[in-house]
Length: 146
Image 1 (spheres, rainbow, N blue to C red):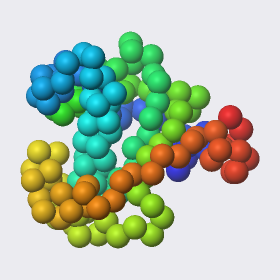
Image 2: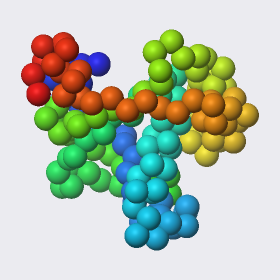
Image 3: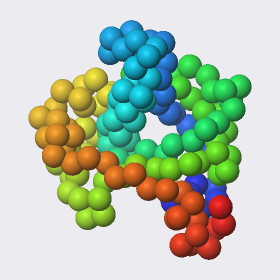
Image 4: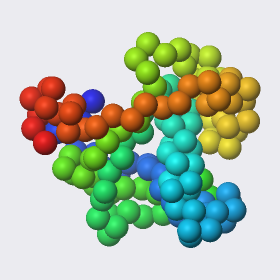
């Protein structure tokens, strides 16, 4: 959790956000930004599950000049060149102790689209919402400042 406590700056990280391609892929209008943001967060959680075996989604407000298109823009993928710790506002994660093992094992190394189709991943998405966490509270508890 180095990025959350301020001991690590994230660099050259894949991320997910609302892109024009994501809006088109999911059929959202510009007025449905909140729904599209939620979709991008869920897609990011599936990407994390496939890449790292866990669903941890960091929310940050970064300088748009540090963001470039990713390989999977239809799923909202971008690359963030640098994400200073002060840009992180919150994170979403599974409840501590939650069993994501079956979904993580099934999704390992797959694309978001392929992982999305798996029954183990769909089961996880249907039965377990990600929990919102405030980064300020985390930093206070760990002595990392705000």
